[in-house]
Image 1 (cartoon, rainbow, N blue to C red):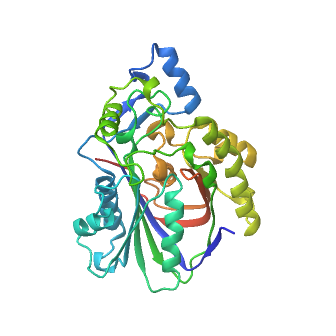
Image 2: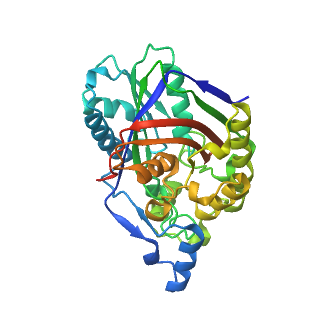
Length: 353
């Protein structure tokens, strides 16, 4: 079973950073009129997205978030025992992002650096991994970074994908605490359906040739007609997975650890689109007032979307305390569900870079 119980580790703070450049979905070049754009915005709930220019990466966004969080917590950098980075968009092929941030933050050479490669459930999945390493008290403080600049690899003419995805970076501060309340996870993978989101070219299985690389670069630049692009996201398979598997995963988590869904303050879901969120909430019998939404402003920011939503709801509040049920889902196809209680965490305003 994919159930995990973590004790004696507390979440101390969350910080987020997004690119300052904004794309308005009403201005996308492939809509023939304003009504068509408004229909897309109405169905997805996504009006605009923060999109990284060529010179800003997920590493840059997460670094800014980490610097802010460490300053707000007044943590001595020498006290940070572990730095983890979860992303699908590393700066380099053979040099992990955690090493880059470790250097720029000037952390101790005794700081453990770990990188995770995962999709939309990455924040929850990597959080469970970091917490497992911390719960015996050998690691006292950790920073978990999570972010993507997924817009950089999107087809500029793809009417289904480009209006959905935005970019963001997140920093999460964690600390060993004998009195911390337990954190519960349910994590799983339905890999036989994973091709619904797979991009097959460019890795070591199918390396780029001169022809396929040119096609990929032209696609990202918006030079390839949509009908010539075959490796598109299977939207219906992803939708079906989300509205069936996610409620089951959340209900199993609550059943296993005797969590009363009625007692939660908020259900934070991966910000895929408004229709998916509404369907999951309905199947969970959770009022939409308890399902915070940030996708109107930020779109689908992949694995950063849950912590970004927590921050956007609570930023500037000096006394952030709530019972949280959350679930990330997507690439894999996989999911990660979690329950935790936060109290008096640091949660600064989302920054622009």
